[in-house]
Length: 56
Image (cartoon, rainbow, N blue to C red; front, side):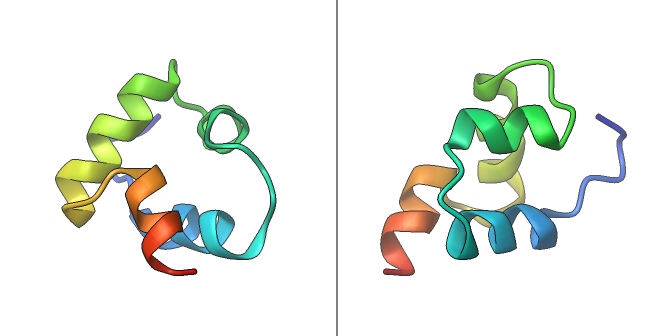
């Protein structure tokens, strides 16, 4: 994962696909789901799960 992470595509995947958060983190080349979650929360103020749930 590069240091230029933008949550835009991650948000798209969370809202418009049925991929699990684990699959999304792997697809975005994060070393672990927990690292993806911490970076996503730092950038958006929500965990991926919270973001996906709030958009429903």
